[in-house]
Image 1 (spheres, rainbow, N blue to C red):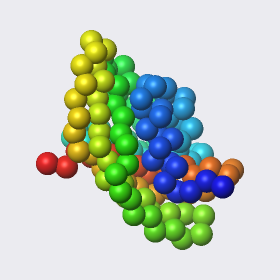
Image 2: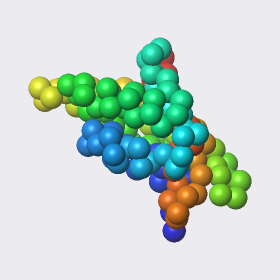
Image 3: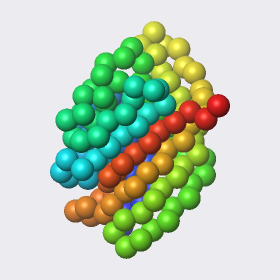
Length: 126
């Protein structure tokens, strides 16, 4: 059985692989989805906009990932709010690695036996 926190890990795997199809599969079906990243311009609402934002992000010369340190999950039937404190890491195409604090939060819902994002926000706390 899957758990809401699996949505955090599934999205991480897609980000590390820079796999747009896998990342979009981490979101609930339909157009009522959203994503917000750390940078001011990294906000998207709707499947086409999320696809464009993540597609551009995955074309950068670096891959992003994270590992969850601690998490809070508030489950309400087939929906849940997830907040994860994480250790972020960026791997550049030139082989450099940089670590940074990271947070992933948002609303997930159970769809076809898998927890998927309705809205996800990733951020770098300062």
